[in-house]
Image (cartoon, rainbow, N blue to C red; front, side, top):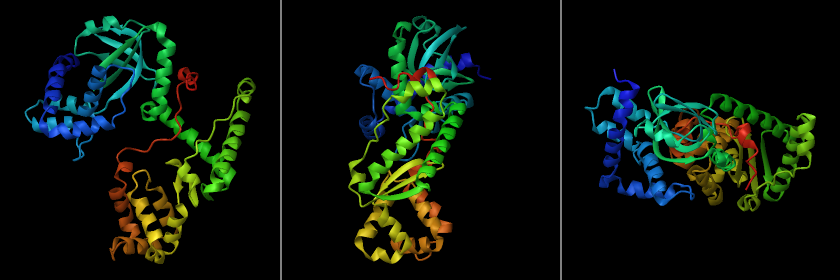
Length: 383
């Protein structure tokens, strides 16, 4: 049975073979498209950016057939030992983070991720000597992949001395806010995120009287500002007196208004238990055609419904909410729209949503509220 030491020794060769496999002409187009779409940090060199991107592309990027390069590599090498196949496929579970070095542990390094507050025992396929430049209390920005019960450095590594603590914490706070999924690797933070979302949804319902509100574009911004001020006052009132006094004079965050919503005849605001707070432009047209499928004869209503189906930013949520009002009427609506006389929303609705809204089913739902670590909270608003 392969030990962690054996797997670490073999991992370097496997990674090189995997990168070589990616250099086939069949991946050229996907590589170019993924590179254009990938948001790379401007603070590192072009060479570092390329290494970071290539590591992402090989292990995580989904090709048009839905598979990753590492999955195709494993499939193309059926002679690989089971331990190596499992190792390679495990590398799809990447941890991106900003890590503080805690201590050495034999040939491994013990680090704590500033973003998810979890501790990782880390190896390098370049050997333990590489950790000499990562002393206790220094910081490492890198990517980790599983290797047995531990972790392996993957791709580029940037090391910062302890004296740059403020700079590194600020960078980590920015990463956490831009990529909340990184926070939710920690199950305690995931649970806290859901708790925060439920509490905010309760405030929304107390303010509006319901979790689904339809407003005119003219009313939208003013109502959202009033709701935010209502929410802020409730949150402040629940704080200990010292915190309440300290935060009382801080300005309320400004509500960022999308001009497209302001220009809409109607805007729906839905605060769902799972999907959180969502806004939908021109919702009134879609709501009306669900209530009266005969409106499909009118081009404006039909096109708006098609737009909602085709728009990748529109989740399945409004379809479920509107269909639940009258399942039979929803069935009739999609019979007419799709020209499928046998369509039944109860039987076929979820399949339709999975087909037309596939991206929303690719990962488990996560809360829209991110419980950022206390040691990063002070850096959130710093420029």
